[in-house]
View (cartoon, rainbow, N blue to C red):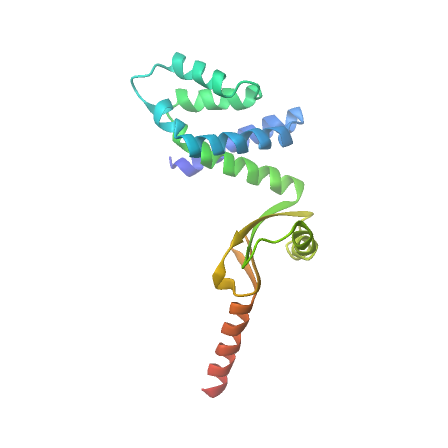
Length: 180
């Protein structure tokens, strides 16, 4: 079974558990931290090491994630026990996606030539949310000098190109097709 399918199953189970307990928002916050910790500190190497027994791994998880919900810690312990600790980032991504879908939220990346202010991001949020039929859009701002001016927004596989570079390319294409 592919790791992607397994990660989805864990995420589905977590979503159902969090939904039953009414703790989805807390779980999202905790799992975002867990994903960051795993990516920055390479915990996977230690937790997947065959010479370290599971009792020490579980004790380590309890110490590192002290104060986190039992659902989070128990999920990590289960993944260690099943030798699937490498799928933590994928489980987190799928879980957050499920929570966002249930709450009408979409995550988007906005590319701009300079960092956008909070006010500018707020101005982009309403029309973008309306276009995608969502209640809220959470933006991540990425600086991209190739944009030249304006912004380019990516939501999932869809790109809205309002950049100066994109407009110039569209003008160039219309000129080329007009000359043919």
